Length: 248
Image (cartoon, rainbow, N blue to C red; front, side, top):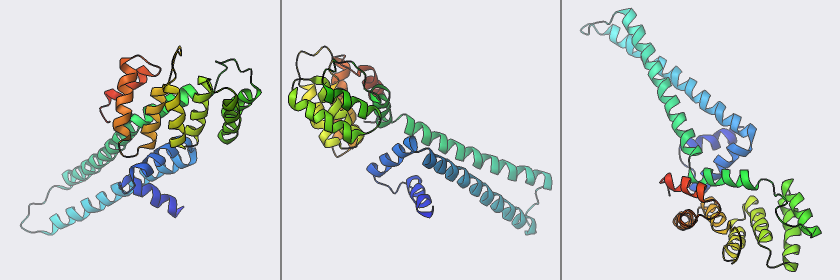
């Protein structure tokens, strides 16, 4: 428990690296118990802050009352003043929390991740799944067993090297496992495939770069998102929304 509190506190004190912050934010989405602990930490910190402010306000009032040359503020006004201090402090805390939540929810990584979760949380029968390995791979993916899904997709790819869906599904399985380098290889191959009716390769590459967040990844992701938007490729609407944030 102490380790968890220290971990949460390090996030709000901004002592985590960008990669560690991304892991923290992803965990808030995926782990309900952890999200509750974060919410409890925020609420507790607010209560402690209010208590400290009240103590400081009380000490200040006593000091003012003891100074003979200092006009004493009427008791009613001093109580009212102390309440306003607490109200202002609470408002500041709520403002900080609100700004934090807005910043997190409107980040490029969050928008990109939401797109993947909504569109690719389950693989549908968009393709003719005449291969038993493809069908089993999709089923494993939809049940969250990405290691098993990869086993089936990789075998299927060896027999069907020109299948764009297999490229996407293999890359998505790596993405869900946070093996971003492998995912990028698959999406890069996909983006270079010609003659497809639709091709999400560029957008999936951009999303993966944002999630990996290594040096230079954001700049490369921005170029890809601009291309997706300008050429109206798959994911163009979300690409535009991410670019409008002006946080890349």
